[in-house]
Image (cartoon, rainbow, N blue to C red; front, side, top):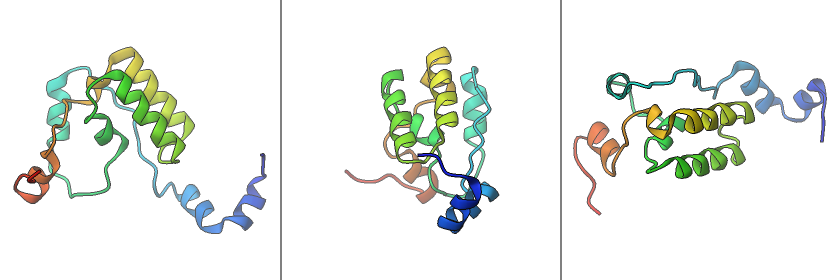
Length: 119
């Protein structure tokens, strides 16, 4: 189904506004081939927020799992088709660890809450 911009704006004013403002846009233009560089960047303090696609990918065990996650995020509309293809290309060419060191269970609770989670 194809729809012109003005019709889309009238039918979905809030979604149109978010898309125009790029409110939920995430820049994914960095490839870290050096694991230390990726880890240094990832360890910079930041406030807890919704996980980014990169956060999800860093929990993957292998490239196949990363592709599944990208497919899922694309189906859910959390990344655009263009962003998804860039992520897939990075996984194919450089592997899932090009996004940084694997995040193990409890990493985020330890980082943001100061302790592990039982379970």
